[in-house]
Image 1 (cartoon, rainbow, N blue to C red):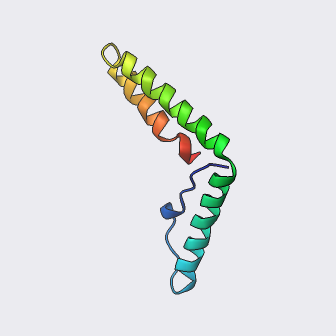
Image 2 (cartoon, rainbow, N blue to C red):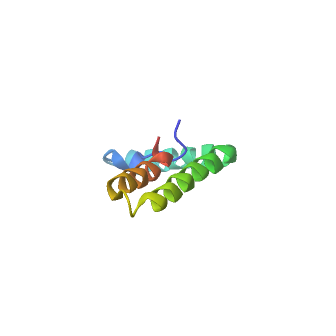
Length: 78
C-alpha cells in the first residue's frame, strides 16, 4: 500500500457524506504514514538517489535525467 494515497484523484461523492468520507480517507492515510516511518524514510532515500543520479547524467543525457526525475516524483504514490 502506498504511503501517500491519492483520494483527490477520485471525484467526491455528493452531499454531506462526501466530505466526511474524504476526511476519513485522508485521516486513514495519515495514520498509516505515522505508523510506518521507516517506509517513508525508505521512499525519501529512493527519491533522493534518483534525483542525484538525474543530476549526474543531466549534461550527457537529458532525456534519461527527465525519466529519472519522473520516476522519483511517483515513488510516494505507489
